[in-house]
Length: 438
Image (cartoon, rainbow, N blue to C red):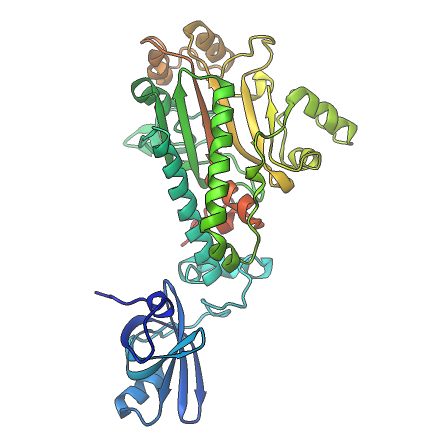
């Protein structure tokens, strides 16, 4: 098993120590009696110097090595100031790379966000995942998940695993991805909210991180066919409680990333957005948002969902993320509480990112009274649909006021890292009108 990583050498192996490293060849340069080989592993890169007066077999291996070949090298660590390199004593090819890609997979010069490279990268995602910029984004993604779990665990939440296959969609059937299993039509989950709603009546504070699927086509910079949700529900709570909870998470996450993610952000080549520090976030009602948009030249009509263009227009009025509250009940799914002061609205609030990055997440006060649930189900054509019987039953067994939020992980990463598209924030993106490959 591999014991020493390149990062270990960079961080403290003393001069003249002999180490054995395993990794891949990133670059090869031939100079008369010397070969310079950049060897990379998951933690970094180091230069290996092979001199011609070494054993013939080692020299021959170094002469024939190609970029992306898997190699092992044994040699002495030499230090020049802060720079370290390996003077090779033994060099072996574990697996010779027999093909090459252009641009090279691990190139530091390639901008993986450049539109001119996108088709090449998407077609060969299984290979370009080795690119250092792409690796940094995915390491950042893993860090966000770890920090978010830390917040949940610190605040008494339990993680609930919800099924991916579900008999019911959150919205209409044609907005979900349908799957036929032995003659039974089911769906890939759009939202685990129904399952967290059941679990919250056992555990009171629950969360989930998992994939969601979209059947309704959208080709914007913030939509994927398959994406990940961070969702949570709390019992005995209202919309104000869940808004406060979300703002607490955003503050904790931003503070933690400031201290833990600087090297990753530098590797991505962007700047970390720290607008999450500026809580509480300002609010604007749906009604006021429509008025402001129409005054600003938008053709949006009251009763329509506020889309990406409108969110971008509104964000010009705010220096931080902001909430849009109290949308019309006609635009929202049935599980959300009707506004107590205006029955045409629901107790929902969506958090819109700063800098024009659009909606990050939604919060809602969820229905707990059976008569209101039946009213909303009738309104949405769900009442009497036997597939929803179990959802209704939750409300017949001591259902309590509860509130929830759901945040798109890829949208969060895109905003925090200031990168152009959500496809760049997930290892293997699934994009509309594109064949599912690799």
